[in-house]
Image 1 (spheres, rainbow, N blue to C red):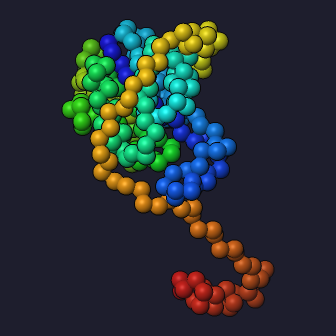
Image 2: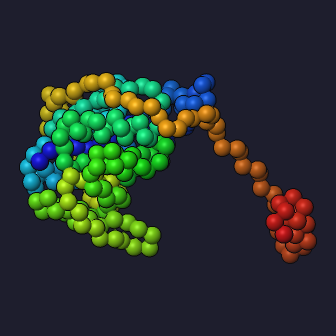
Image 3: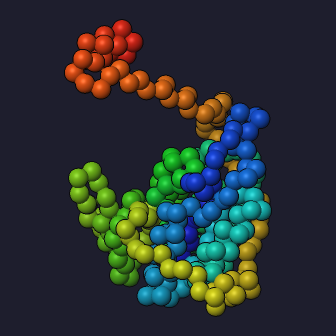
Length: 248
């Protein structure tokens, strides 16, 4: 079975984000980039499926030269090979999905895993868009995955509970936290990853459907006020709620 996992290279959640001079991108200086955390669950489920059914796992990532390190981490976990779709332009989710769908077709992968969302823009729609472009079945926010032949049974998170879904290959799965416990790369895996191939090719880019006009930092919070420490402060508090906060 040919399995693909689409991964992203994202800023560490602990990084301090500064908007670039163009007001449309972030300044990457002093920002540590990591493998998107939700993609780790996608990689692990792909590897478990390969161990059960055989086949190969191909990692696909869209971005610049820095994405190679992220692909290499996935290879160290046990993936077989990687593809870097080279692109440094600022494109939207639709364009990203089109580039990934084009490569998945070329790879002839019939089972594709994504993280449920990427923690940089948090759109959470790349997997679904890609599935639509491929005309593949799709199950999102998956927390339990089973496959038997071409039959797939999943549980996915919904508000207030879980939903059981049955579908067939070809299929796109977007992984949610709780699906599995991602493995750590072993020393043997790290050494083996250095010999594995990362194919580089120009990404197939279509025009974006949206455009970033301007990015800006959130406005600073207004400092709080202490109007007293006992019941005598209540009249002043009520006055401030009426006059300043205008909520009463």
